[in-house]
Image (cartoon, rainbow, N blue to C red):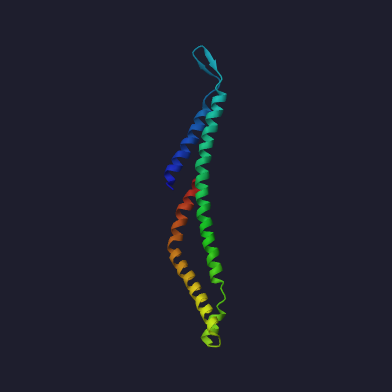
Length: 138
């Protein structure tokens, strides 16, 4: 997300709302007096809709990013929760051949989870800077 563009667009809408709110109603145009209250209300409503569109997109982006991180953490928790007692038994050499293959697979699965965590450790801190800025705009 280009947060500066979102911030400028939101501020532009807020400024338009404030300018419309300051406009006196009814307005005199020459000899004609016009009640512009309905137009003011509609313009303010359009500005509010655009503000909500921008902020909901930013909010959804934050939610998607954090939900993805949460799913990753759940998969890591599940992957690290594997029972490696079979691997310890293989080390003691008191298991059968099938148990040894399963314990090797479990150990490799846990090691791959640890690898994934190491890869993710570099990118996770980079995620929170833009997310923090996005929350500050909201």
